[in-house]
Length: 118
Length: 118
DNA sequence: GTGCAACCTGGAGTGCACTCCAGGTCAAGT
DNA sequence: ACTTGACCTGGAGTGCACTCCAGGTTGCAC
Image (cartoon, rainbow over the protein chains, first blue to last red):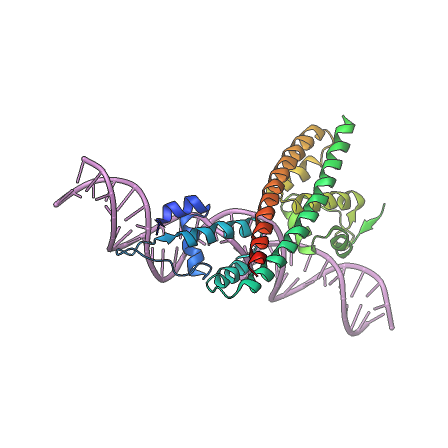
């Protein structure tokens, strides 16, 4: 079973080491395994979770929802809840996206208008 | 020349009254005209600017850049600078959008995978 | 002319998501 | 063995963009 140091985990997941500790404190990650000396040793499972959490964060999921998802992942009979959570999030993402696309349109119209002045 | 009370301006622009005052303090809006009693009276020009500022904010432009844009709008020989600023912003928006679209894809793949378990 | 909502000011407080710090421990190369 | 860098903890600090507050003034409706 491969494990990863904090630095490796940070670089592979895209979260900073401080953020990894923060997520653990916040109960988003389960308590991470330790070496004899007390250093964290992240597993492949945690890496996978972290990569997906990164996706959730980058699509704007707030940390509180992240915690809910992370906790659901600690039990394997929670797939329906995870689906529900992700479906709801997907909907939110779609709405945000539609909003931004509309504003992007306005922005490019404004630019066109400015260019027509020159 | 129509003018608007703070409450009207807030409801038309989508910013709160507190945010309108904050933007004025921050130099994003020019000093707004006042009635005899000292109450703000927003003009159509300010309304128009605010509506566009809303578009810029909702596409993630930071307040510091907003200030730059607002200040450029106080002089009418700054159209090239405004174009440059908006082109740069449009590029940033496009990048963010591409990012989110990619993550949205991952999200829907994950959902598909979860659904396939049931 | 009185009530009451909307407005004013300067300044303090909030929420979110980290990020940094001090003071100490652990691990790997030489 | 010793150095050096990565890691540990609890807790404080940061940055952004507002948002709220106290204590007072204005202005319309009755």
